[in-house]
Image (cartoon, rainbow, N blue to C red; front, side, top):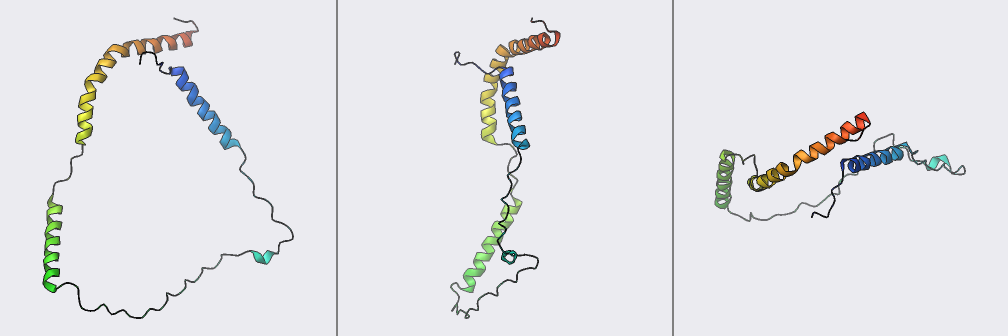
Length: 142
């Protein structure tokens, strides 16, 4: 991984400026115009939607004979009681934790590696950017 060069701050800023410039160009471009209607088309071909369109009535259906119930009243009552019990238990259950346990585990595993990398590289990164900015402001490279 040592051979791979990370993009510099200037590269990143240049890329962002390029994207912003391209976006401004797209916004500045004139919107496409619609073709003009042909002059020989009659005006009465246009459908005006000034008035609401009445909904078509639903088709009439013959009543359906469902026959006798598929379940007995006892089975239906027992099912209702069980579902009510489930609803009570679900309502009383504690809310789920706000923290994802997997996320916490990954964070705990990555934290020491991140600390080690920052301890090794942060001061050099800050020093380089401070020198570069001082050089840009004063006009003299440091």
